[in-house]
Length: 238
Image 1: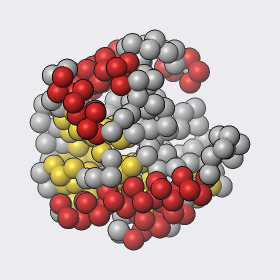
Image 2: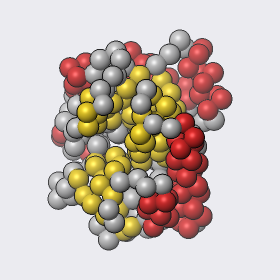
Image 3: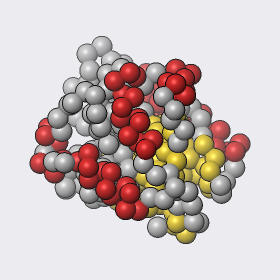
Image 4: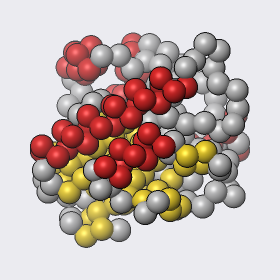
């Protein structure tokens, strides 16, 4: 019962959005995801997908992408990313899954998911790459809200027990930016290792960085060559 993760699948079964904005490395990425997934993930394994799952603008548009993920081996736990505009309330998403016969997907939002001896926690997080913030956005308010969501997930994880594995969509540290509210929550709960996505075409950024005693591993799909990243293999950490 292994645990894997891979972020930023950017599937577009219905929307048909091209991925060339991220470079030629994304050529044929849909089939590469399927092939690499099938090569390593078994039916008893779990894969965490921390954000940017589908280019769909509505839940209806995202259903074909969710069906594709559901058809792959293993259990999947999804976290919202900045491009997941289709994401609605968990009640609406759960109904859509039931209506479409999807049984292998779970969604992480202000909660934690216990699987055997470990518990999956996480949230979208927040990010600043030095670019201008979206018009009308309140960065401090958004960051505080995301920190609260992460704390709710970790608090639920404490109640459910087991070893906690923590995932974010956005990197809490990037270049000169440090998202202190997120870092504070991680430290409060004694988190020493996280996995994150979001970043593409950043060969100068190491896959693993360390900040204030926390190991941070980038698991964007293209950085992984579209093969899910093994975290633990039946209790043995990778």
